[in-house]
Image (cartoon, rainbow, N blue to C red; front, side):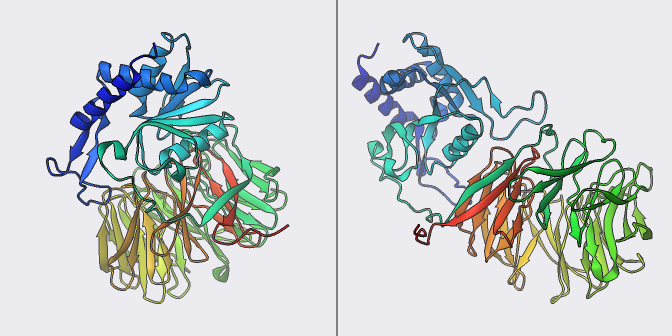
Length: 546
């Protein structure tokens, strides 16, 4: 079986050079940032050719025959025909193996799996057509670790870099040198931060259907509070991740329970639920202090204004001409101070300006409404080209309010009269609440980019390719920006938008992390109801001596 390996390798190399390699001189090749590329390898041209797949399978078995038993898998889609060929030929070699593939994002319908096929207890060899920076392999390593399965090696047809570059074992049939192309240099900025998982909370009954932002954790004293998909609002011990208490809310609506992110003031935590109620609970024991019951659904997150002793939150109703609104509630009693209603649903979360005595909220009717915070009277409304579901950032110094819309537009308005000052157009919906920091505004888009715009010139300072949809709000810690994406990667970017650290979660990251400035920890949620408690290790500093 293992004969003519050199001849088969030579033949495959010639086919790759002739059919897979594409020169920019012959075809237009566009890179991830819109720039023209000189070349690329398009392995799809041979991955459905039976002769090529058979050769790749035989060469794989020549490398790994003595490492049996194992199982193989890879990230969709290029790996699928490769490992299918390897699995098919395994019986011919008398070494039958198991195969599986990993979805880029968990399927939201059907069986809602992220891993298709069955994992067994044998070590894994990850398969891909080519490996460049190794980012996709790192994500798979994290997922396999969560599943409790050992990864032995990664296998690819083509490798772009020297093997010493990768923090994992790798075998490849060819390198760029085999095609007279210099190996890629280590151009990626060296990572400055590394994350350590202190604890990991898993929700027992996650709802994988909804991939929009859900309940972001809040913390107070020794507890981390957030809502879950199974009608529970929970508080965890921030040191151990163990349950302190839980409070059960009422009915769900189409599987939606608590998407509202809590706000904490003094010893009270406030949140809404899709049972139509707004709740105020004691942070220490979870006992209910009050409940506001006048809505049909509440997906909005409350904003607490201590100076007005008020809580602002969006409401939704099952009425034909009055679908949404915003209410001001007394912080201590939950009694209604005022309410303003409009035609569209209100999933958006309010933002408040003390200087301008104003509270803003968006609606599914495409409008943004700015109201007098004390009496609820409308100051102005502004219509976008899409639903406005996230929240806002208010620049009180410049007198501006900034936000994104589902029309893909990022808007800058005059807060006093609602006049449009500037609009920046992205290529997909914006579900991310912008972060303003030191003259810049940072936000994500479903077009897979994270943007930074200068608030004075409105020029694009930088944009970062996150590789997947971005609905999470950016946060800033010590001048660094932290934001997750739907591919499960939690990025750390410096002021120039360079990736200086990352953490690979197994599930979509759809919400902002929460930073505990006292314990110097990050609480990172995923759409599956998980919370990772992360500690940062600065790789630029020498380790402390024992």
